[in-house]
Image (cartoon, rainbow, N blue to C red):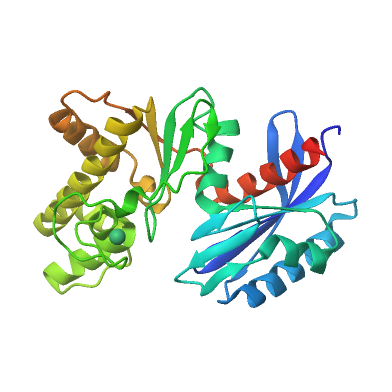
Length: 301
Ligand SMILES: [Zn+2]
């Protein structure tokens, strides 16, 4: 099939849903119309809201829409089209693809939010020139899309939940997870626990760090250490050319990449020390990736 006209992409996040009418063009896919709404938990509620968003965007488009691309968090079975498990959003083995196809009457591609975001960075973001890479958004949680041999692997990529030895408990039931110290949520929480002062998020801690706040410096250094150790483990196993950092924490830019690069230099012995890059597509990556999944599906027909 020729390159498609328009698809509708929906990225279901832990707190909000992003939907877009997406056009395909010579420079890649781009959103031409967008909608956002809060996420309601449960598979049925999500399908209901996805269906509403698809209808709204279809009405707004005035052009035929060829397919839907839907991505969700948690454990995802792309082949079966099911959301296997999401602790936060409350589903187990939920048949998203089938339900959305039935409700919208449109062919639907289904995938994982982080892997889809990685696909978008690989096709049209800051991983375009890479063959082996780790694309790691850091927000409320930490996960990664693993690019191996130029393809986004279906591997879980749960680098946020590997034990790097600090001993603190994690929501997943283990101790010592990267995420328990280095997610945006963990950085804000740990600063507040240390000082008794509330902060709006990791960005505020980064600001305090720049202003010379010693508590922010400790929390930041511990986050960077956990992250470096997680990246080192991935480097030992996969030897990626680069780690592309995205999500809210990557907005800290060099305040993140400078100390992280320095810590990697200190810790690396035999591993290939990956280049550190910042993601290009921001919080649109998941939605653009969902659109790419839909377009790939149409082209394979
Ligand atoms: Zn964990």
